[in-house]
Image (cartoon, rainbow, N blue to C red; front, side, top):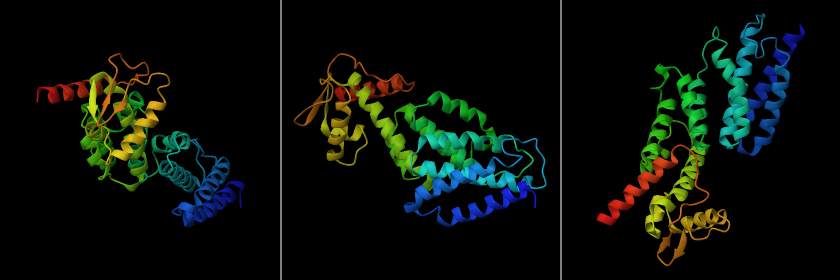
Length: 276
């Protein structure tokens, strides 16, 4: 048996061990360790990140690497480990785009959708649009891609209630942790932008605006976010049944692209309330 064949056999056996435990939430550390060991073995494959290389075990090598990396991405998504997600995805991308002679993975669009969702959750809107353009147009109607595209539209429109509704209708359970991450991101941006739109806001109005189910969670969130403002304690000052805001622009306002959209949406909402 050649050295490459031995490496393929070793990787296959370790991968089978991994699959036996990968759904066990108590064995996340063990799963990560196995995936790391697999990557070391993969470096012995002549085809590793080398789509032009032809070997007798090419098909086995490609499938083993691709599936292990997909599991690594899914594990990272489940635990909101953004760095691990990005590192594994960048290697996996090569297997999606450059190994065109091999059958497409059934998880490809799920992984690409998670990648888009991760970018939204991290406020990387420019990267999100660049990555979306790299996905074939015919794949945009796939539920894994389409749902994320719709989420981004809800954010840009300021339709946060629709985003909340979408949270309970995700196309896969794999989306849930990153959806929660996205919700936190949007809450923080709305929190910052509200300073520019309101002079005062009722506690109940703030609860709805920040998409909380109860006031207790709202107050904890506001306290945590205000603590990050440092010396500026005039914004989101709690007075009885309302919050008050300073007239000056918030010095820590976000610079991400959809911040202006959020400010406009909040301003229009405030004006409608005032006229009514």
